[in-house]
Length: 357
Image 1 (cartoon, one colour):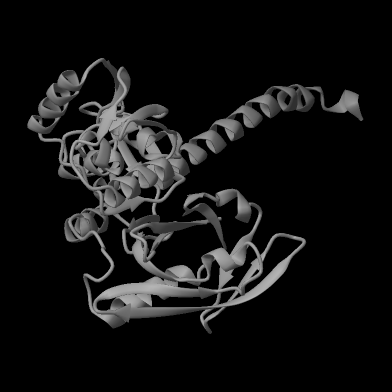
Image 2 (cartoon, rainbow, N blue to C red):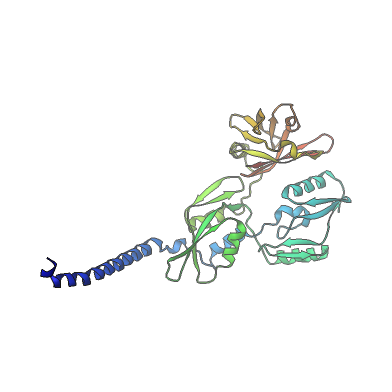
């Protein structure tokens, strides 16, 4: 049989490899066409370096220095922990934001002026996250003045929620990389390094968090820019809105997820007494505290007295819960933390901070 068709077999041997290569090239061309159709991004989803939106993102993600303004009197720069302050001749090491809250409480409870000094040298963090060593009070004041004169107008009332991802495109408008962002600093650095001609865009949807604890799902650049314009100066403070609105926002945050005691001060720091306990607050005003060994049932109640919002906590008298069985004024809160304060009769105060787990 083979001897009868020699020409056929030779032609077959020649044609098969060629057909195979043609099929491969056709498949690759088809895939390339499909990729082009999928990954080309509309102009409405692209962020360019000199755009209004790019500037908004930089302002929202620059280093916020307001958390320690009670110490350095500036929201433009911040002190890098650990550092030491001297209050009425007593040294105190500041390592966390909770320590700064303790400093603020001590200052509120102490009469007089010029009671706080910074132990120099210290490290200063600027809005662009760069760091400088400062050796004196005069040098710090000069840095603060320079920083504020440069117009670093940060956005403090709206935050990005992480992680989020950004697609980067080449000159042919095709996807070249996808970057995952985990923090404000990473997003700020990315925007600072975005050069003219670079094309990048968020992979929507992304989430914005307002200072009230409300979350907004964003699906595009125009929607993102609009929400920043609406909410950038809309920082929430308890008592600022009507009672019903404050009540509903606070309850929604309180009854969402589990909490632990991040800081508790009553005459001394007693945070350790609640180590390991998880607190859950239910919408029916019941509560639960448990640490794997002990379970304690409790109750809570929101109140508003003469314009001061607060919460009554009652987990019984058994230690350590009897120490927090008080009516606590609400100092500040958002979706991740609750700061409470109880004023004692003897001109002293207890501080209780819950942090979302």
